[in-house]
Image (cartoon, rainbow, N blue to C red):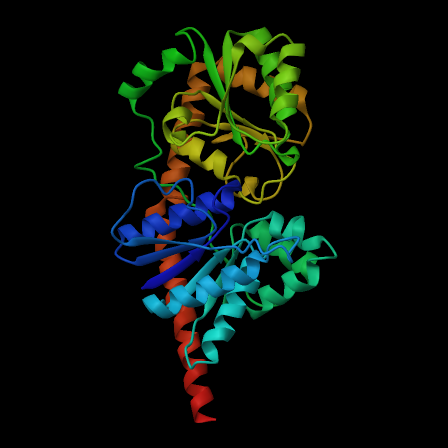
Length: 388
């Protein structure tokens, strides 16, 4: 198949998932065309089956805000026509589903069919989609999509409740390449001493440091852990709450044990050096960072929100706590890190969960099957239209 993929290339899990999906599909022989305003940051190098189309945005002085959605629709239509794309797969509803709809209509006027699938990732429904300025257009884009998927059962139900969506929503959960995200003992021996001494435990947090991620809770949890046992914290990512987190680490006297390493391309290698992930988010529609950690044999201390309980089974492959319960999270972390047998059991179960339920080899065929279903439905509608 020839598939066009659009996502936000530099922000959040939706862009990561879309990019990894494109890479996996290309590895399976499909021709993938990324259509975005900049190259996705995880799209390192060039696969023979992957092409990138940059969306040009006009800086004409009449426009106070450049009309990216219109430029995107044009680029989608052009890429589809020039390269005979079979379908578009857009990630994050706003504005991508509307741009795809416009591209479909542009090509339909020339007798060309271009179905599109929208994948919902979370804040496009739970935050942006609820804004009165965007709610009607969000709902319209979803209703007009030829296919609709959500990354968790929780998000599917929130979409139905919040937007009044009654159509079918296919749940296809996020995935991880377990050959890429894994613990390499040799690499751990070489690289871990850069971040922690042999007698110290190494905790990790990975996010875009937005308020919903509650990075200040991460620092507070670690401060308590560090008082109970020798430990260090690796903070991977960047965002608006980074400076506040750095200030809090200094105020709590743990700044010398916290490494803010910013955005990193080798996330898989860094996570694998660690013992435990701290993910105290206020909301996670799935929890991709936790899954990536689990694949590396790093269990997560997380919150019982959103789609996380669909990934983490409390006491089996990680721990779940109420949002904001820093005391309990810290106590849970200390309990795990102080008990090597418990840590190993959780780590093994975490890896097993990633391999059995969320591996790329299990999830990618679900997307391929759904693509074929949507294309089949599109062809049926086209034949019916001709017969009428």
